[in-house]
Length: 193
Image (cartoon, rainbow, N blue to C red; front, side, top):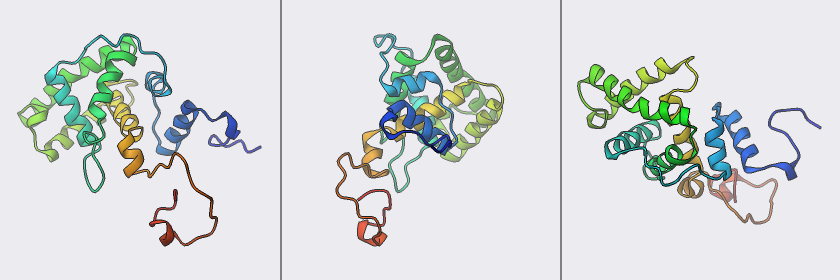
């Protein structure tokens, strides 16, 4: 049997294993809290509301800058801000939640010092500059607000129904398999039919 990190018996492929393999391909390491949420672990306390309206707006703006709308849906289109809020409220550990909630005012302070305004009021290129500085400051620091919001954005985006249908062209009940056909016959999409 092949010993590649992406190989394994087909019948043992779980959602958690699929995400692990996808993260290897994407070069993203997900925290156990993110994996547990996507794998269907029971939430800690879904009645807890950690983020207020200003924090929600900031998280939505960050997610949209990380995965903006182009010719494909953006993070807001895919419902990523609601996914992130659910992650923060119900699935992150207490330590991760403190890091996430504490990172919101840090991002605002960085935005004020770099651009003189709240992050949500900045132009997209200014937001990119602030996020770049935040990402640079996060290098080598382990779990940070930036790492948590980035991975939650990626997981929320690529596990959303909208992205599955419109970007990834997920086909839950695939048709017959035709091995060697011109890609033009399948809509120029080589991973589905």
